[in-house]
Structure formats: structure tokens, C-alpha cells
Length: 188
Image (tube, rainbow, N blue to C red; front, top):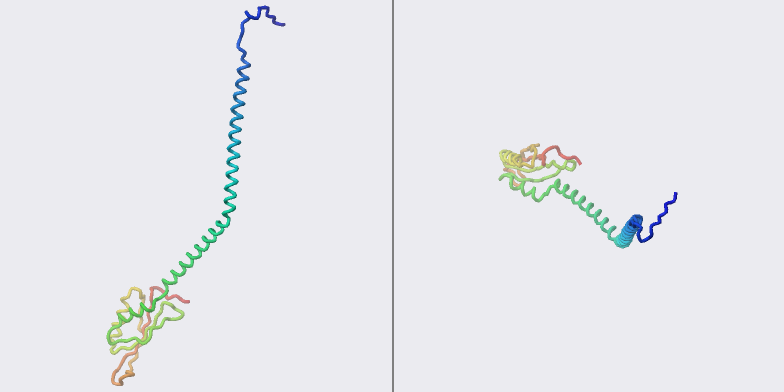
């Protein structure tokens, strides 16, 4: 059935059109959405241009990166070689210092003729010398045993003979083996 309103227009009850509020709300939401989308698009394009600049800078610095990596490899190699050298220098014996120490502990009336390091055993040192009396040899062996860097001292041989300078003087030739640095000798 059709509803007919016969009241004149000026007297008719006018209601507020709700659909216009809905349309206005939809337009506002659409405008905010478009503004956010436009802002994000501008930020995205700006970030993309900055990223392109950074990538170009990285490409231009590729040579420096290769040099840096090569430098790191060379530093690691130098450190490894330095460690090898320091380990070898620890096991190396400085003869100048060692001979001076031997001279300091050698008693009066006892003299050294030769000091040799074994070729196949780096820790074994043989000392040959002469002494006027056996007590001097024993004092020398005792002095060697007091050294903390020496693991063992052994008197290998003694032999009595006439002096080459004066036939009236008897000397005792001796040979002593020393095991240095404690423990077993290292075989090469």
C-alpha cells in the first residue's frame, strides 16, 4: 500500500536524513585511508631511493672490502707465524747465556774442553772437561744438579791422565751428560 502524505510541505515533520551521515563518514574514512596510503607511498619511495644510494656506495666500496678481508687474512697469518716463532724461541737454547752460566758454576781447578748438544735429542747436552782433583768434578756435578732447568745430570766417564802442558801434573778427564728442561728429551 502506498503512503500518501497530504500535509503541506511546510508543515510536514522534517527528519534529519541519516543516510547523509553515513555517506559523510564513508568519505572521511576514504580520505584518511587515501592520505595514509599516499604518506606510506612517499616514505616507501624515499626509503627506496636511500637504499639505492647505499647500494651504490657499497658497490663503490667493494675494493675496500676486498682489501679489508685480505688484511684480515694477512693479520691472522702473521699472528699464526708469530705464535710459531714464540713457541720455537721458547724451545731454543741461547748458547751465549748458557755458556756464561756454565762458566759461573764451574769450580776453580776444573775447566771445560767442549760442550755439545745431541743432534737427535735436543735436551741432551754433553760436557767434556778436565779437573785437577775428583772433588772438583763432584762439586761441578752438584752445582749442575742445583739448576732448576736441569732434570738430570750423569757423570758418564772419568779418566786419569798426564797433563799435555806439564808431564808432572795428573789431570782427570771427565764427560757429563745433562738432560735440560725436565722430562724426556725430544727426538727430532
